[in-house]
Every structure is written in C-alpha cells, then in structure tokens.
Image (cartoon, rainbow, N blue to C red; front, side):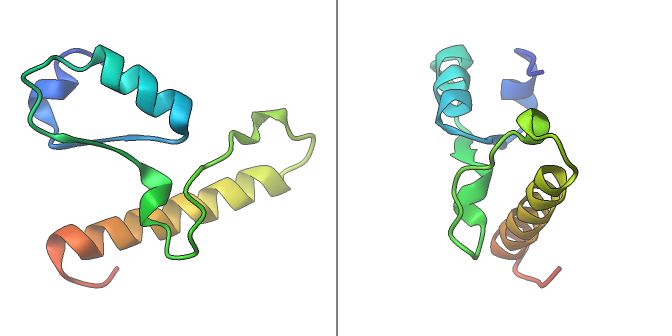
Length: 85
C-alpha cells in the first residue's frame, strides 16, 4: 500500500506490472520529482513484468516471483550504488 507521504520520502517507487505503474502515476502529485518504474525493468534476465503468484496453486509461482524480485533489486542497487550485491 502506498501513502501520499511516500512521494515525499522516496526517490524511487516501484510497481510490479503496468497496472501498478498506471495507478502510481495517477496517485503521484504533479510536483513529484522521483522515479516511478517497473521493478522488473532492472531484471538482468529481461522479465519486466513480475507476475502475481497468488493465483497459483503451488509454491513454484512464489519462488519464481521471489527470484525475479531478488535479481531486479540486486541489479537496481548495483546501478544506483555502483557495487555488486
């Protein structure tokens, strides 16, 4: 869940899919100077959309989602901080 104060606090706000991005852009104030981006856009394997695993009837979807988020977060941190994770 995102709060209005998040747009004042954070330089980067991530969505998992295009619907999230649209919602975030609609919620963001015009003066927001940060970035709204797909977390998956940082995934080195090129999987830009992080699919919601709740519709799966097994753990594999959650494992896949976790792995993709971990890859994307590591790549993001490498980009902004310039060191490997």
